[in-house]
Length: 262
Ligand code: GLP
Image (cartoon, rainbow, N blue to C red):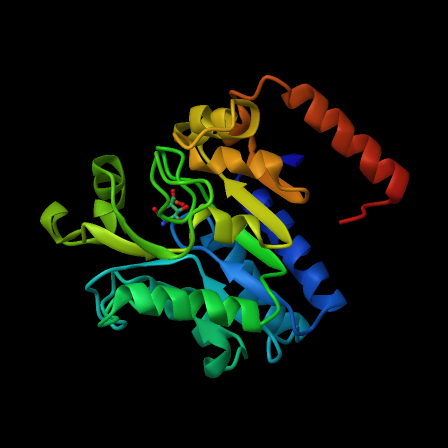
């Protein structure tokens, strides 16, 4: 795993955007996996800015989101559909038919999840998947104890997750108890992962995910077995990492040697 430690949230977002933009320039029809939550907001803002100011086009891009709550309509302000359109899709030239977000209203969720997996496969797989981390170590909505081979499916949300995400809802009782999420196995199949984390409240779980044992109790720890992961963390999120001095040093060397090779 390549670990890039940035000064703050702003710099983390810019660094992440630089990586996405580089991949997009290499492959204009990039298959881009996207995440929600507060963490990638700065990345999305930066991508919108680059699209507007530097005319970067997303016209050929296909996107797949990690997850969606069960039972929320796409126009519900707390849904991940709404979040994605509001914060990214409405401001770039991505084509509507190229956007995939799990349908939390699917009549037959099991069948639907299989269909979602097939769409990823048909697109040729995800080239670059953006992931954040929940305070209980989840990626997507793969709560502790999820099978590390799991595929897209319905998951029951952990109490901690419900509390953490309550800030997006009028009341705690309004947070759905279930979500559709790509599985850990689905995420692992992305060709590259871009892992973002920010803030002190994430530092302990980030250390477990990057340096702890690979365990279903911290589903994000599975990233350790993926061949191509770039973790972009701010100072605060990186503060509990044992090897942070090494990561800084390695990054400095890599940039000097390759002149910035991401
Ligand atoms: C939700 C999402 C995750 C996200 C996590 C962290 O649970 N399903 O994909 O990583 O929240 O959110 P935040 O970035 O707001 O801390």
